[in-house]
Length: 291
Image (tube, rainbow, N blue to C red):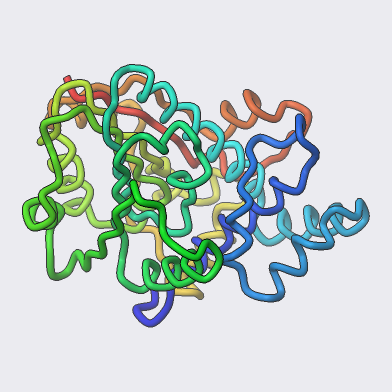
């Protein structure tokens, strides 16, 4: 990510959520009235006029051409993670942490989180832009949410937890969406090690890319173009998992087990069978439980 500005991909995900939120009630996968506040003027206009069918069809065509499968994968995974978080709360979670929060709005759009402490942790650049937009549009920040910034080159999650007195003794759900593919092996290990310090019955809900997309991009539709486009905006993908290795050996090193792991093909089919689309089959959502 460029050090002088918020992640461009964070804005694209907000754009996708804003577009999905304009669909009629009963057809949309979720409703995010806040996503639009993070968009530049051009993207805001696109959302405004997307309710006109020809405009929406054109936007869908342009997005798919630029990012094959990215839109449907993005909105389906948003709903899937919402549902996984709800299931974690139903299982006794008492605290939620959002790592690399970007322009995630779950802390204010999901009513079932209102009664829980929510902690958002992000890079200072993205966090500054997000907090400015929230304060301008909401007037004040929600009382149950704490916002912390961290530069991983200067501070670890363990150090942040100690300084900020984050409670590691209660069952916690950690959301880690759209981050691991930008990190080093060591940074991913450190995040799982951080998760392993939380109470048993805690959950880590995270996304990752299939290692094969890094080894052989041509094996996935649209992946070679995507990796080249990301390189141009200095958002290189550097890390992936092999799903079997993740399940059979990696998680066990950190005292956890995989209880959910689905790729874009599966969660798109589950949430939007009427909107088939190719692309992004290498993107996956998993949930680990602290044993």
